[in-house]
Image (tube, rainbow, N blue to C red; front, side):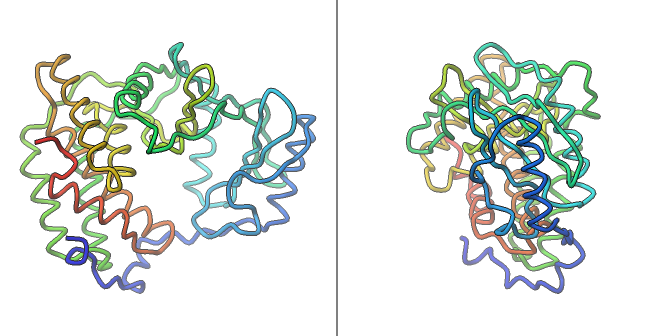
Length: 323
């Protein structure tokens, strides 16, 4: 279905939704990293991400290792984009207030500054990022449950994500994707029909914490406990499926059996807790993630994402769901 779903993509039509990120100069970013290392009393090592000279528009930060123990890293904001600035401030605030359960660790900010550009020194996660080949569905769902039990003391996240939030995050981006011909009109229509077919069956529940960007690259294993990093997008979720959906949409195309197993575990857990498998909640959450991923590539990179659209096709065809 991918070939039938991909539009010809018209960059000129996409300009209305493209955020024109201005990157700081490589010298500014490296100078900020050196300042941070000096404040921490450590030596600056190699970047963990693309270095400042390799950064491209749409990158939000550059991260360096620091010498010594316990492990620390330097994160430097890469752009003066207003949305990124808000997320940066939120990241600093959230870091101070996260209270994870005993089976989960989260990074803490130790030092921060704004000159020559915004930077912070945070804990380096122990272990290494999870791999799809060795990450079992059962273990990953346990991580989702640990995230849901994480508290945010004294932090106002605004309105929790309920049905109206999910619908808004699907309908408007689909229109943008169709208008820019990232996806074909027929694909957009099918996605909206899927939303409408499940909308009457959505069930709102007491809110829980959601990481809201829970990819395997944010889950570190191999230490005494599992670490989850990059919490700046965290929200409250009333459909209870956003983090499961993110894992499935980001990684399920290459391992559909694994995705179906994870979906089945999440629905069986919901059945045991609420007497309802929340199948429609999961479908709409996966739709929101797939559409959002394609729209983020359009907005931040001014590009069409084959991977996101292929995941969208899998969601529409219900290939991520057990029979």
